[in-house]
Length: 104
Image (cartoon, rainbow, N blue to C red; front, side):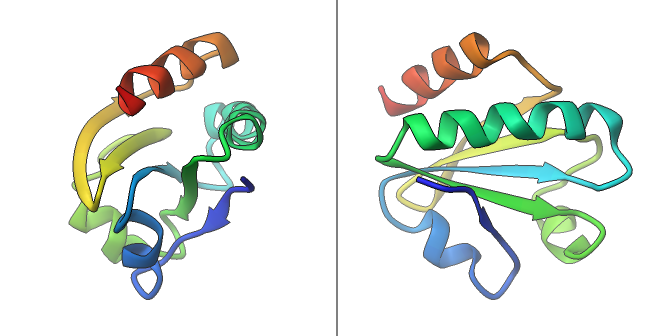
């Protein structure tokens, strides 16, 4: 499943049912730019997990609501409830392992 752009307006639709992961990022963030393709790759490999991309510059209120202080940050949800927060970029195998843990 492709990564979708997330804002305050559509956040609930992305996270309300099942397993989802929000990816907090910014265009000026070097590690985010390196990690973005990894997130996109894993989102294509995991059709039963919804992935959302949150640009913190375009959506500062959403970043504030989640208490995002550093990027990249992933916030996993199960049925709308945040269940895990992971800061920093990771490799594709590391992200696959994390997604496996999230899916339980």
